[in-house]
Image (cartoon, rainbow, N blue to C red; front, top):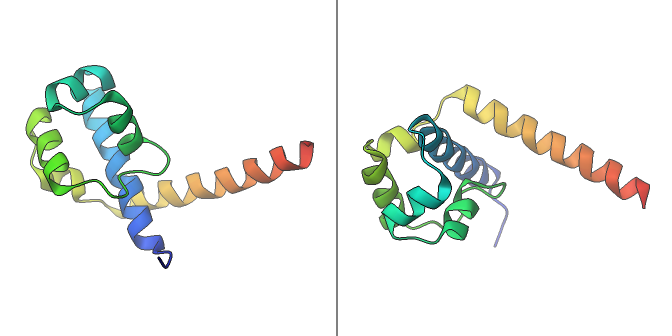
Length: 103
């Protein structure tokens, strides 16, 4: 499958937004995953470095409903979200490059 940077960026933003809303509500990943009926490792994957790549609409709906927010709240992103993701990707590349140089 061809790389789709915009899609990957969107998925990372979505995962980070879910994590942010969850933390604002004082929920742990374990608690939110339990309430949604998904595994903690799956929620961690959604919120993690790869973002929500491949996450179903049904799971996003369950997460939004459990967090008592509209799905639109999770999927609507502004330019600041995208800039943060771009900076994160650059940081990972630099850190990966530096760690590879140490070996």
